[in-house]
Length: 300
Ligand SMILES: NC(=O)c1ccc[n+]([C@@H]2O[C@H](COP(=O)([O-])OP(=O)(O)OC[C@H]3O[C@@H](n4cnc5c(N)ncnc54)[C@H](OP(=O)(O)O)[C@@H]3O)[C@@H](O)[C@H]2O)c1
Image 1 (tube, rainbow, N blue to C red):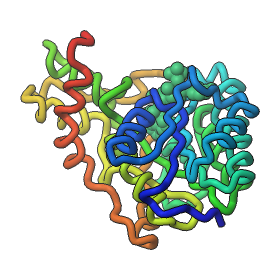
Image 2 (image 1 turned 180 degrees about the horizontal axis):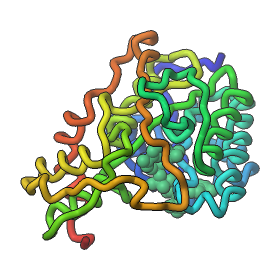
Image 3 (image 1 turned 90 degrees about the vertical axis):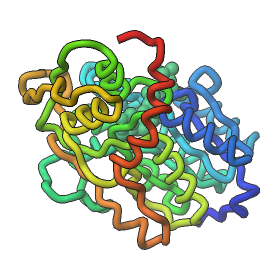
Image 4 (image 1 turned 120 degrees about the vertical axis):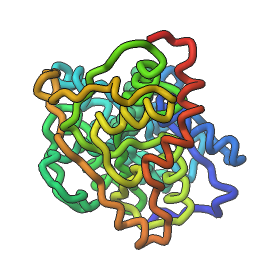
């Protein structure tokens, strides 16, 4: 099992650090005074296995958090091989490099590895069954980490992220709330809206707890349909939630199928003595000013 040094002296390497989650994680680590090397795509393309090995060898991190990914869910349908090379093959090589170096690897993954047919929360060890190419590519990455780095590989699944940087459904709804008229939102797709800052914090807590490697679920608690989330955002922004009109997912055909309802079970946190994440409504209330600052001036 990978031995982590004392939390205060820990060295972190974050890939994909300009993305939605990577930005919040790198910022959180820096402001907590950690030694962090944050690499954007322009600094390190994770498909370049030789460079990945070199940077890990040079920086000697205690933990690598891979926030780099192909995240275009619809685009993956027509470009599955490209998605797989980033979300699968590159992750396998990174996991092997971390195992060789003796550092932990946190691979960020997704609720989209599940088919969304279960009414109950999916436990961490539930059998994945992705319904789209993106989900298949992310599942390949999960399996690679558990296979290549069983002693120090963590798979942290999250869902429906929003944050200060990057595009998200929540940011789009906040802009709609500030504008005129009504907006139609899917009512029959259910998930867990999650503040990227909370997911980042949970990753830090997981690593600091020196928890056993394996699969963990980092989503804000509770569940919501897209419609409920949009209406909550309108209400918090002081707009009329009645301006958000329900539509069926079937009325909005997209390239990739979406799982209808995925709620991720959180039982493993208690087992390692880490608080599970707060309810999504509490997180959203706290996040709204941050989201608003991030969406200001970017137009509708
Ligand atoms: N957003 C969500 O709702 C959500 C939900 C569940 C799980 N996740 C997972 O959370 C993680 C972070 O996602 P995110 O929301 O932060 O996505 P994001 O904002 O799209 O960030 C991903 C980052 O990875 C970079 N990247 C893409 N290909 C790369 C490569 N070959 N080498 C290095 N960097 C590369 C991207 O750079 P460019 O922009 O320059 O391409 C981008 O900065 C991913 O693993 C994702 O699957 C996200």
